[in-house]
Length: 259
Picture 1 (cartoon, rainbow, N blue to C red):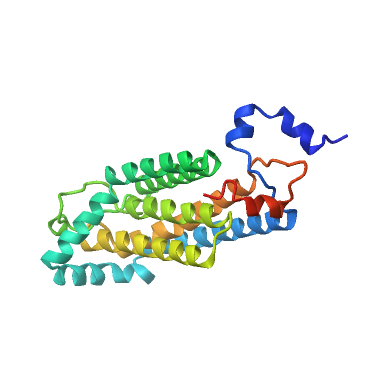
Picture 2: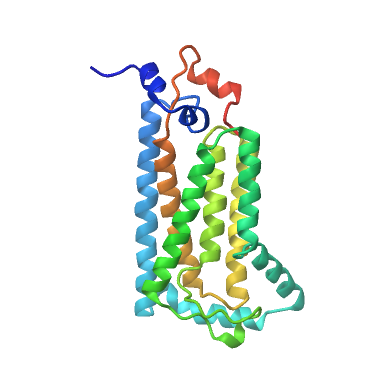
């Protein structure tokens, strides 16, 4: 005999109930739809990644643009653009990005008094970082020539771009975790534009400054779709509260855990 939702709720540790469980359960069709969307994202991202990787290994397809794009970027460098690109690189780099993420996480927990979505975002970013390090070692692709690197020589492997993957995971997964709890179309549009502009600028920076090829960027964007799919699947599986009286609509309208 199955236990009632309230009995299951009482069996959970208090910290799970307080900081991880969501106030309102999505109806089953919606949960199924999210799982399907997650699977499609992982499948599409994986396919795109291996297509890019095959092009790099065989020197065909998108990889044919690597050298022409690098050469064009070098020819069109200016002092103003270079200063702007270096600033973006510092903010999105291994020192600046962890600070940005840490401040964001602290503010989110303080504002929402809830840890589930912050946990999902952290797991997604750690997954992306691990994938980038593992794949870089397995592929072992060299970066563009050192003489074109503008802010010091980087001897590490090039494929994929860890900078782009990290920023994409932060902005795309973070945007999903905000929008999936309900937002107006204006806020949704602003978040989508912020993600596109943020990822685009970092991607441009990595090629402009001479540290990555175009295919490195494409591989990172493909992997970010896989990470987003995994994050959606994890979030859809999340622990759920079952209020005895409040309906789903009431929970949504109350604004709980929607920050």
